[in-house]
Image (tube, rainbow, N blue to C red):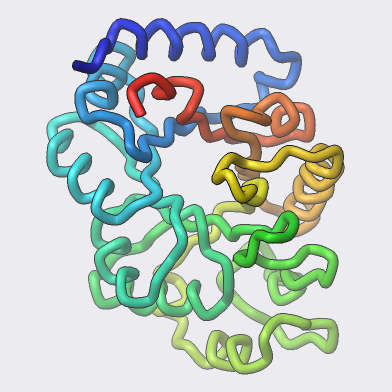
Length: 255
């Protein structure tokens, strides 16, 4: 049986910790990650604390929780790896997608959103460290295709410095304006790589990498930077994140 009072206690304790951080004033929202959390625990946060920003890593989890909690004013975020065969359903169900790891994925999402007559907000995932495989590699400046876009991050311009996959760049440029406009790129996000024990690795490089990502995002005019989770939210806030994602700290005993 899920002890929802404990979930509320942990949520309240966490929010107090966050609010006491000197950089918390820059945070626009705290996203609660519901991966494997019991439905009753998620419902309690929506009902008792009016929390409205939740994220799911799994398509099945997103389907289940969105359906069960349809009467609550929740914004659902998809945070998991993007598989081509699932993108259609993810676009249909999610209000935002925070794990776009390539131009190919961005293009696929844009096409699906166009078919569904929908504009969907996305974050670009930045590759942080090995053994993580997904994401744009910041050391190679792969986001130069966003430069000189005059605040329209969906318009790709020609540049000799573009280093992302050539075929994907060309295909993205060739998409019609309505297709490119079906995705709105809000900002950048990153997650530490998983260790072999499936717990997120925290190294001395994480804070430096977070500062680098914030600097990169600001340089491209992004207003939103999502960094930090249960294990490293303080590093994310210190670096200048505008959003953090918390799950394990709240639901740990319900998992």
